[in-house]
Length: 80
Image (cartoon, rainbow, N blue to C red; front, side, top):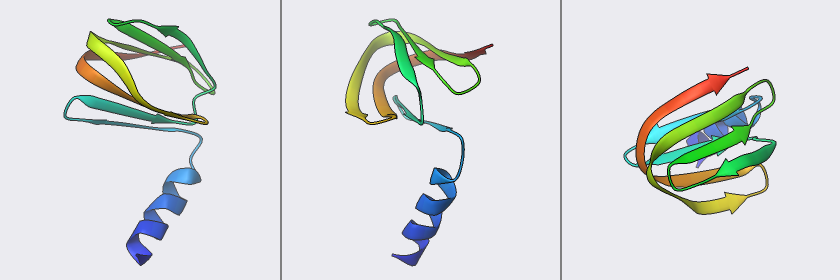
């Protein structure tokens, strides 16, 4: 359990973090959802907009400042 707490504290100390694995993308500390479509999701982040392009994109989990999206991820762009 010590390793779990250490990792959680490390991640929560960051301004944001983005994890991409298998057919999921997990984003922590986004500000707002600007666009939510089946082929494109745009999130307002602290210093940029995060654009996620893909197919069959669906929100699997939505928490305060945290989102988990599943689908075929074709690209991720940072736009200032």
